[in-house]
View: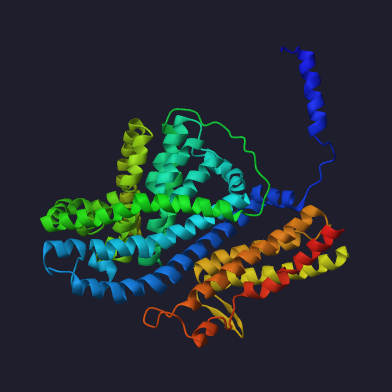
Length: 404
Length: 147
C-alpha cells in the first residue's frame, strides 16, 4: 500500500495524538542537579569532589584494607617463607625463576613467578582493579559520565578531541585494553589516532596505579601531574600536526537515576573477567622472561650498554633496563621491580614516569595492532619522540632545581 | 513551611562551612596538623588541600542558594552542597572503617575489639561535624515534595 504525503502526515498526527502528552515542562530536582553538574562554575567543584571520593575510596580499599592489611601479611608472613622452604633446588635456575631470591623477606624483592608474580597479580592489582571498575560502573549507572563529557568538552577540543574522549581516558585508568576499543566512539581517524596514542603513553592503568600507591605513595601526585601535563601538551601538538577533522558532538544526556545493581554486577564481572584473562598471564610470563634474561646475563649487558644514555639523558641508574624490559609485558610489574633498585626520590619519580610513557604493555600493543598497523607505527613514532623529549625534560627540571 | 527558616539555617551553615574550608587550606599551607579538643585538621595536601577546596565550594553553594530558597534551582544548590559534604565525610568514615578491621602488619589477622572501637574515637575532621547539619536539607526536600 502506498500513502500520499498528505496521508502520511495525517497518520503521523493520529499516532502523535495517541502517544504524545502535551503539557508545560516543569523542572524537577533531578533536572536542576543535572544542570549544576554541566555548568563549569558549579560542575568543576563537583567533578573535583567526585574524583576526590573516587581516589580516596580506591586507595583506602585497595591499599590500606586489601594489600597492606591482608595480602602483605599473607604473602610475606606465610606464603613466602613456606614456598622458600618447600620448593626444591635452592640456588638452581629453576628455583630462581619460580621462587626468586632465596634470601628475600618480602614478595616485592623475591621476583619469582610464584612469589612476586602472584603477589603483584592477586595481592596488589586485583583489589585495585576491582574497586576501580566498581566505582566506574556506579558513576556510569547513576548518569554522571555523560555530564562529565559535557563539562570537559571545551578542554578536549583544544587537543582535537571532544567530551566523549573522557570515556576512554577514564577507562584507561582501569586498563588500556578496553580503552583502546572505546576509542571507536570518536568519529574521525584523527581523533582515534590522537586518543589511542595519548592513552597508550600518558594514562597509567589501574594495576600500575595500585603498585605506585604501594611503592611510591608520597610521590604519586607528582608522577600523575607530569603525566597529565604530558597528556595535554602532546595532545595539543598532535592536534596541530595530524591532518583530519575534529567534529562537534551532540550528546543525549540521560536523567540521573538510581543505580541498578544487576547492571553494575554484570559490568564488573565482564571487566574483571577480561582483566584476569589478559593481564594475569602476562604478569607471570613477564617474571619468567625477565628472570631468564637476568640468568643469561642479557640485562647486565644491556644495563652496561645503555648506562650512558640512561644516566646521561634521563638521569636514572643503568639498572632500570630490567624494569623497562618488564614494562613491555606488564607496567605494574616494572614499577614493582623499580622499587628494589637503589635510587633517589627524584630518580624514582623519573623512572616511574619513564615506565609509564614507555612502550604500552603487550596486551595494549595487540589491541593497537587490531585497530590498524598504520596507527600503531604512528603511535610508536610519537612514543619514541615523547620518551626522549619528555624524559630528558624531567631530568632537566630536576637538574635546574638542584634536587637530582 | 517557612522560606525564612531555610535561609537563616543554610546561611549560618554556609558561613561555618566556608570558615572550616578556609581553615583547612590555612592549616595545609602551614604544614602542621591542627588539633583543638575533638577537632583535628590535617595538613596533608590531599585531605587538607583538595578537601579544603571542596568544603569552600560547599560553603559557596549553600550561600548562593539563599535567595528565593524554596525555588527548585536554589534548593538544588543547597542539596549539592550537602552532597559534597556527604562525599567528603563518607570517604573519611570509609578510611576509618578500612583501618579498623584488620590487625596491622605485625599484629593478628583481625583487630581487637578495643582497637576496632578506638579507630572511631575523636578527634574528627571538620567535615564530620558538618555532616549531621547538612542532613537537614532532606527535611526541606521532603516538605517541598509534599507541597
